[in-house]
Image (cartoon, rainbow, N blue to C red; front, side, top):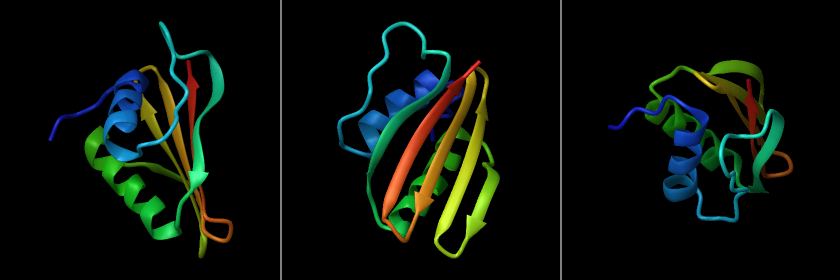
Length: 101
């Protein structure tokens, strides 16, 4: 399985292989600060599966920021920033934020 090391590589992987949806495309480098990359309706199980797939693809263990019965928020540290994936089961919401250095 191909390893990903940067936000740009993850965004390319994510947009091509994980979710077929409208994403924000970046030209050049990812804008500095926290940027919403994707937000959509998704059930909690599928969302947590995306986290697991992302961990395998990034070859990185996510940092657990919050976890409850219906909430899971993780952070992946990458060489050029961080990736935050949030799963909120009660409202079936999946979000991905990038935080660049």
